[in-house]
Image 1 (cartoon, rainbow, N blue to C red):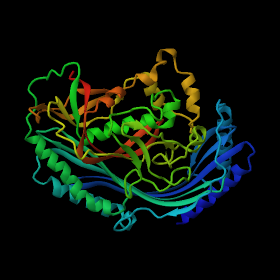
Image 2: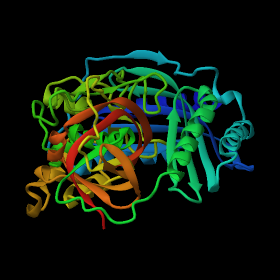
Image 3: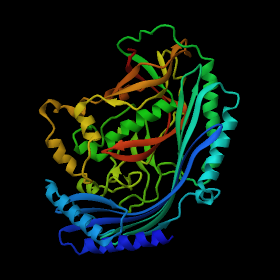
Image 4: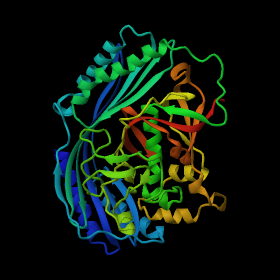
Length: 492
């Protein structure tokens, strides 16, 4: 705790320093004390196991209505003074056309001790944790015919505070752990999964079951025949996205309900617009122990559920404090810190929950293709892709300035949004049943195709991972059922 005490003291010094600057209208300052474990295993051995620690301080300030973000691991006064001066100067010269306004009336005092179950990950050193991962992997893969099986493990135990110039003080504890797993059989497609949790050491206890899920899939794939010839899907096909593929579809679809996507000119969706068919309901929630959940966001706001879509209609956008004031609504704690805190926090969903349809008939009858899993999609619109992949100041309103500089050939950007999902694993469908296996090709989905969803399944799965937004790395989690829609299938 000595490092945490030092980081808190430094954060309080930075806050006081920013409060003394006349040009700084508002600021958030955070302290971070992180204990981490990194490692990798194969069934026969632990290849690496390392414990790390780091203390840091971050701040996001608004000067002359514009924002800047900094993260520092050196607490030397001269170094911090230099960073603060550069931070203020960077925000000032940004010359954002629409100045940000701030909520000066809401003050939070809160503590959240995390969602650990069965103890803390800090109760074990790196060697003990990685040996437990290795043992679970070895037990699961015994008897499987694999060319390769490996697991990368990472956890962070974080004590943090958020202080603001309007009086908020929030202290939280978060234990976030994950594994990236690869099973590569000799005679079946490679299986890759990410599993993540914020539930403490119970995550380690869950790994045998998680690994067995993959082993079950490998055994199933080994006995599944591949398609001998390239199917002819025609111009438009009826495609069933299984729960895992569906989760990825909705994860990327919900980026268009982040308010900065609207301000950038990339999203066609306003509140009240139809996004999907009647009956489609999507909530962004905060599940205890979920990989992507937090009790408070980077602004010190309590994280609360928000209905994004109900009955197929857009009901809300995701906001930060500035955009909520701009739009006359209330933020729900949707400003997610970047993993590692080196990059600015971004507006992002926490844990998306796509409702099942308990009365749904079979989703495969008359369909052409079942897609079990997909790779991350390519955004076809060059303007949107460039905006999302580029760095952006940590001020949501600056997105409006970027929109004004969009080249004229992309004036219809919001209406020309297309995802191309490479197929990781799928099957042709014959008489309503999954048939030959497909591991190549892609499914092309436009935003308008989502309105063609003709069925939502009953059984759901949860997918976790990390997502890049303006170079910030953000955790995401989605629980979704299978869906059926009309889309184009490319087999080349």
